[in-house]
Amino acid sequence: YFFNNLYLKQQNNLFFHSFINNHLNDYVAVILLLSVYNILAYLLKSNGIYKLRTILSLCIICSWVWECLAIYIKSDSVFDWNDILFYFLSGLTYWAIFKFV
Image 1 (tube, rainbow, N blue to C red):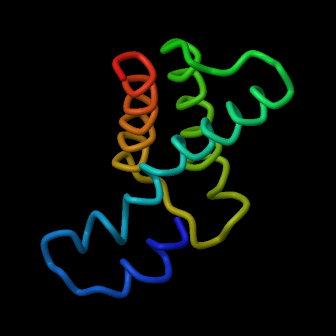
Image 2 (cartoon, rainbow, N blue to C red; image 1 turned 90 degrees about the horizontal axis):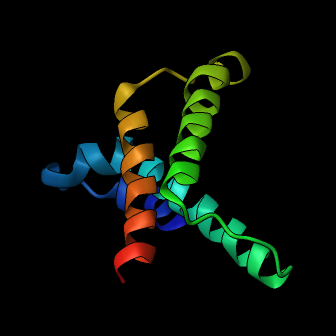
C-alpha cells in the first residue's frame, strides 16, 4: 500500500498507470485485511478466516463500507464498480493461495 502510494503512483508508465492509480490499493486491501486478521487469530489461538463463503461475505461488507458508506464520511469518495470487482478478486486470490498452495 505504501509502496504504491509513495512510488508506483508517481511513475508514468501508461500500460499500468490506470490500474496502479485506481485499483491496486483496492486489490491489496482485502488481502492485507485478511492477512492481519489471520496473523492475530493465530497468535491468539483463535480461528482464522479461510473458507470461501466467509471471505466472500467479508468482501461484501468491505464493498458496502468502502464504496457506499465512505461517500457519506469522506467528501472525495466516489462509488466505483471496478473497486468492488477488485475487492472480490483480492478475496478470491487470498482463498486460492490457501486452498492450492
